Length: 286
Image (cartoon, rainbow, N blue to C red; front, top):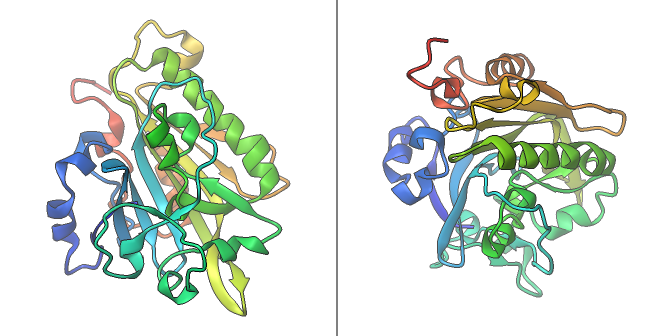
């Protein structure tokens, strides 16, 4: 999972931008990560798999979940990847030489991994939740890109009914929409909000449970002959959903409205943004 870029403390915030290499910035609209989430104890991870960067994750090392994953959408038929072992990020826990995500080794010692990230045991007895990926393999095409999504630093606890019936359906809708109408690169950021609920293991708080999941895409180069029913959802649009077993809907809204919603429901800085200029092309008069 990759190359750890930096801690987002006030002392090194500028260095994060300097260390975010061009090959990692390619997953971000205009090479710029979302702003306004720097108050949390987080690390940037440029997710490396099989010698290539695949996407970027902002990871909370205290709550042991990603705040968001940012990736570029790849056109596909939506096939699922199979037989991929769950992986972890070596550089979150120790100074491993490798800058790539690695499968959990057999008989690994918990203390080698669990201080700064989730481990497989955290989910074993969490019967009310399952592992849900923020960057889903359905939004990737190449096998290695799909495989790279199966790391616990790209995973949050999701209520099975919400994940399987609601969120996955929306991922499918977005895949078809971008397949059909996005002509250039589509940038997607998918994240979470939390409100203090935790999964516990051995009397320890281990993983924060998301209250909401949210996602936004930006596709500046799109088909202007897109049918009206879809046309207003370009160049950008967003959605969110409540992570529980009673929620039956996804709310689709403009990116600007998602920003307003997140400012009300989670702690973000006043300069919070998902995409530069909310993904409104400079030439646009709106």
